Image (tube, rainbow, N blue to C red; front, side, top):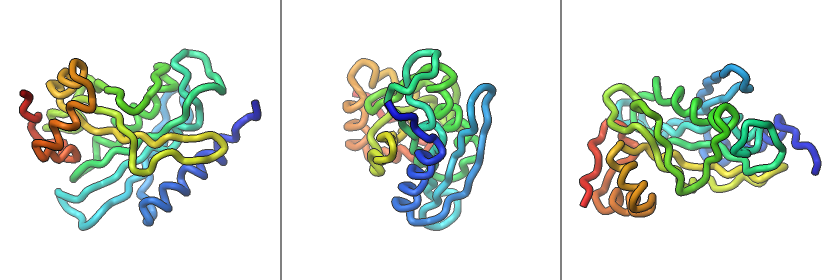
Length: 193
């Protein structure tokens, strides 16, 4: 199996972000002990202000394949994360960076349909303490290795419990029926049947 050049792979992923969002991002970088830097790129949509929609994407998670183990391997899927939120992103980008580092730090393997429990709120005042993982509109970036871009959809504790029992698609249908703005981290949980 040929060795993948992570620098080239991440450059191709970033180019796909630029093509999709059509603007230059604002960048932040986080380094965790034993992990190469994870960048979070922010793409703003529309006007600035408390209701502005921000798309945050990770860059660096795909450097290594997700193996589900503690040993580095060249076998496994590669992914990056996309999170869309309204308003300030001061705390949110750090939470996303932690999630992006988890495959290397904790051996986590992310896939569409999965659930994440953060154990804390996404931001102060938020009742969302986890997320669902879904396929993103960006899809899979065809680079030296395929890199799937997964959407992180913030969810409240009761919603995550519902999804654990009834499935993530059931929760997504509840959100759609109730017209829930999942980008609003200060929202109330959806009413469960």
